[in-house]
Amino acid sequence: MAYGMTKELEMFKREIRRFCENELAPTAAKWDEEGEFPWENVEKLKKMELWGLTIPEAYGGSEVDMTTYITAVIEVARCCANTAVTFFLHCGVPSKCIWKFGTEAQKQKSESGFCQPS
Image 1 (spheres, one colour):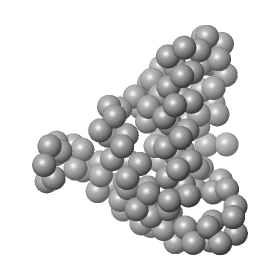
Image 2: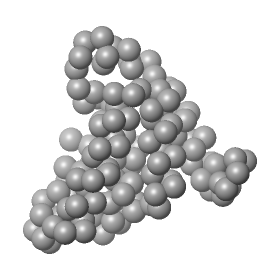
Image 3: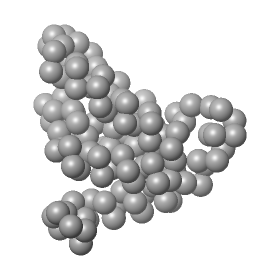
């Protein structure tokens, strides 16, 4: 177990690492070479319920602490930097702004697009 990591976080990290190595790493070079947005990877993250890590449970997310969120970002980045940047930026500032400062209507509208697979 890494310094400061709980057993639960260590298990989460292993699960995310296994997922990323199996699902994201095989296509990482393709996204870079083609200069395409990794929509397929976004859908995979949504299906794994990672896309909504910072979103409150009431709106379909998991609302994990920042250590858990950053652990997930690091594991995604190990396998696909392109996807990690998208994941980090989406779940970071924009999501937090909507959940902290948005109206209830904005939160409700954003719920389907933020967490759920298309």
